[in-house]
Length: 129
Image (cartoon, rainbow, N blue to C red; front, top):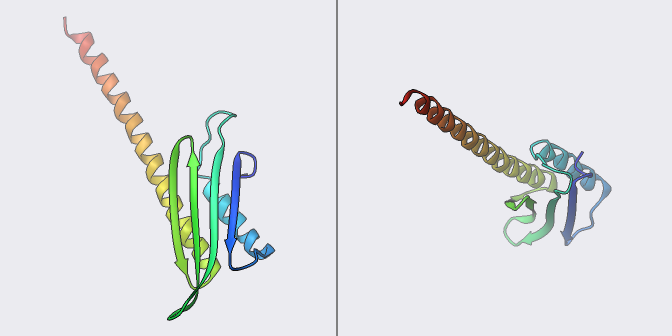
């Protein structure tokens, strides 16, 4: 559950945060929290969320959702604009999960490359005499 290790700050502009929107946001945060691996008990995840209802002269009401996520010195940012708040939250979640998956894959690849390099050095060091 994201409530234990997360510090979540929500800022809403030009609208009131209803319980329905808050529940929908909590569902999206639960989906994001599955990708966040927290090492150690003192590690905190800082999540700043800004939700805004902007009036565009040509397009009417436009909703904007923005998330800044900070985990152990790594920063992730996602911004989305849509016709309704739920669509903006979905786009924001998709963008953040894409960034988290890319980062997780990159770290795993680096770990595997390091292990393969160490294995290669040990293998060739043993046979060179």
